[in-house]
Amino acid sequence: MATINPDNRGLRLAVRYLVLTLIAVIFIFPLVFMVMSSLKPDLQLLRDTSSLRAFLPVGDISLDNYYNAFSRVPIAKFMFNSLFVTATTVALSLLLCSLAAFSFVFLNWSGKNVALSIIIATLIIPFETIAIPLLLFVSKLPWIGMEGLTFGWLDTYRVQIIPLVADGLTIFLFVQYFRDLPRDLIEASRVEGASWMQIYLRVVMPLSGPIVATAAILKFLAMYNQYLWPLMVVQQEAYRPVMVGVQYFFQLSTAWGEIMAYLTIITVPVLVFYLILQRAFIASIASTGVKG
Image (cartoon, rainbow, N blue to C red; front, side, top):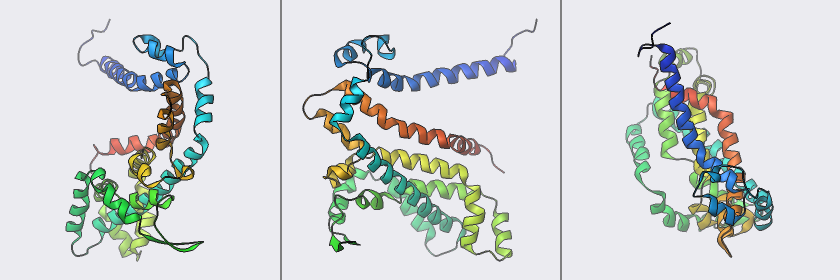
């Protein structure tokens, strides 16, 4: 019989998986509580919060909270608004921020280090400090559309997208990743006569799957969970996102079961998006410890 010692690989692997399982259970508890609470009436929900029954499908279980949530809030419209705004912003952000990072890393132009430092410095500025000036600015911006020249972007999709497309974090992530790419590939491409745009499209971006997934997930979460900015710039229900819809449940009486049902519904796109990109996201995290 083999002696179990600290060098036993099987024991260390079992301990590692045990620790990871415990961490996963801790993080999944809020989701389980939310889903279970969405199936219970308010009185039972509040009563069960003091015991393990809050995490179990026991008692008066039904889908009434979901039916009531759909009748109180135009969930389909809000979901479309959020997904449209989020998807458009993520796509534009990945394009523009990766182009900006490409110029900072591979192109030589005067003042790029100063410009990059200023962009990174914006990370310490809370959005709340610029929200009011930004609101006043976009409320007077011109726009040429089907109706001709108009002024003011309020109550539109563009006011929720364009001001939030570029951000310092996404540019910084791309810059750090691009700096670790093999320079030999770039130099070989230049020798072969490739333009900078061809290098960006055919060399750099095909190698950047992990950081694209990471930046997409972070940007998706930031945009999908936007509350303050849409609340300030959107008054028409036709353009409101899902997070603003939460306030509908506090207007007359607080229905906690319906709130949990609503939160369960709007959490699904986030989980689906992460599951789609999880492999690339994990590869990005793993690659941070691999050099050379």
